[in-house]
Length: 152
Picture (cartoon, one colour):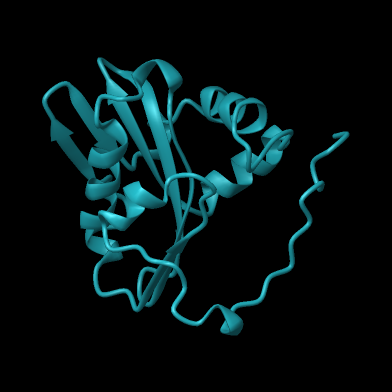
């Protein structure tokens, strides 16, 4: 897939696109900083930088963004799925499942040795797509600063 050509997938009234120009960055920041449990208080500049350096997926209905996800990847061996959300008013209609399936079909995300994610409460959803607890968690280490954005 050409670096400048957005990936697009369509299902009825839904359209998924990797075109960064279409992303509603204000909506993404508002959700992540104000509604998510994993990025509460994240500054807009941090979201902008994350978007610029990730493979991002927006889902749109009638031109309005209803869902988002981003993948941090080298497009060869590794990917990390992050910041996945569906707007509250659009939940329960299968958008998250469809978006995840479309992400996993992206040509640049095929043949990866490892594709990881972290979730507090959506294990059942991700298990449907082959995600499982770490086979050997003792091999994984992290540097985690949970209150990094507090007070910003």
